[in-house]
Length: 195
Image 1 (tube, one colour):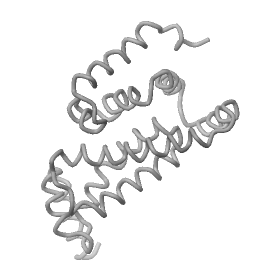
Image 2 (cartoon, rainbow, N blue to C red; image 1 turned 120 degrees about the vertical axis):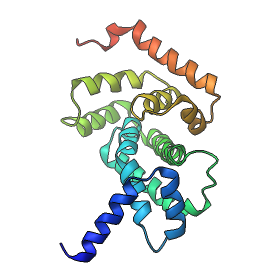
Image 3 (cartoon, rainbow, N blue to C red; image 1 turned 180 degrees about the vertical axis):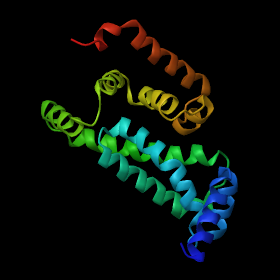
């Protein structure tokens, strides 16, 4: 490893130890010419966002594409980020909105529900195990809004206040919808058991 690579690794290591607000401050100063702080933010949020977008779109390719689009929006708009919410909430909201737009477009393009179910099954075969299929089956019974809340809470590990900001629901509404969604699965477990 030459000296330049070693120095870049040291900078990257130092940046990865910083919290989001520090990275955002540095990235605002660096972008678009230097991307070191932005790259750390990208690495920090890429995988969690893909998991969440996958729960909406049921396609790893579309989830990856959506997250790439979201991070591209972050790159282009970071200088305008006003920090009224945390960076985490802001980036999740961008990905959420893009995933919902893609999901709505997908739903409009579906001509035949049976055909769409077949295509979806083909895409996911071999990618998910039985427990993930049970979770997907349960999530399918929820409205898009309730699914968002559950996915953000369970998969994303977000606080209810962050979810409220992202979904633009009141905090009490988010908590109630989450509780009802969990009650729904608890009260009808036979639907989700093996045949």
